[in-house]
Image (cartoon, rainbow, N blue to C red; front, side, top):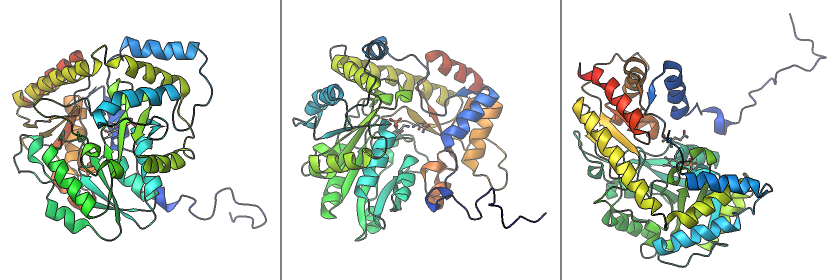
Length: 415
Ligand code: PMP
Ligand code: GLN
């Protein structure tokens, strides 16, 4: 049957999808959580805590709803929350943060990343992404019309420590052009668990200043750092406050990833630019949950909450490291974050044509062993994805019972 030229066609006669999203697929986390749910696997894939959030945090949210804090918040952030953030972070940044001009509350760190890139990157600008990178970085750069430029961390073939993975400063220098505007840093690093040392950050700071760049420093795992490593904020190094946007997340800090509350901390000029983008993205973030995070931050120090969180994750990390070692999956010991990358080269897994080995191995771990993992190749650009062929990522932000169940199932690997 021929279409009647006098009738409007039901479908557009051109591809209505904008080029900026045409190449995007579902995230690796969506794929593997769906697979874990469908197969009944223990989900050590997607990084979300499966344990209860602290009572004092949940009670604060209940009270905020009861108090009828139900209308739009101030676009840059609910005043009680930006004040609480300034209280917590001023000592950590070594300066009196101005809550009204130097902090923007975002819809999780994900929107912090997106809004910062929208605020700072012009079409045609280049943005340096250090591999492995969090998967939303290149997407945010592409949606701003920027060009991602990739520089991988380099590590030994048989690595047992995240600290062995380092930036080659010559490789980094070779990636810079007159169009380079921004470099995205993530410490502690998802998925490797690397915590950049002060020396490494000083070298990076000198490089950033020499090339007149800005840093987006994603520090969402700031409280999950395992001694003797220590978290250093690049914004606190000489000359770096003026050049850095630092991001944090209540999702990680208070085990409430579904609340989607994050923040950007930056000097007034950069914070204002982030706000100018943010005001047109969500406009504002949910008021009662901002109030709850404010209350949680106000109480955190007195409750020694951050120490408790770090110690809890340190014990879980050590437990999962032991499980991996027992079954011959050599881990790269992380100094931070709630992830462990491990070596899968001892696993004999069929790899279908057209599938990356790390993806095939993670599907096999999920479907055959019953423990979901995340393949790290989506944290790399195409030409560098082979670097992760023998790697997979587990998370340990799970109850001890769940880690124990995973340990039992993984014994099948040892035979
Ligand atoms: N950055 C990194 C490195 C992450 O791992 C995550 C967690 N998914 C985010 C940003 C996003 O944080 P949020 O859940 O607060 O949006
Ligand atoms: N950041 C989480 C992880 O790396 C997942 C977040 C998401 O699903 N977008 O596992």
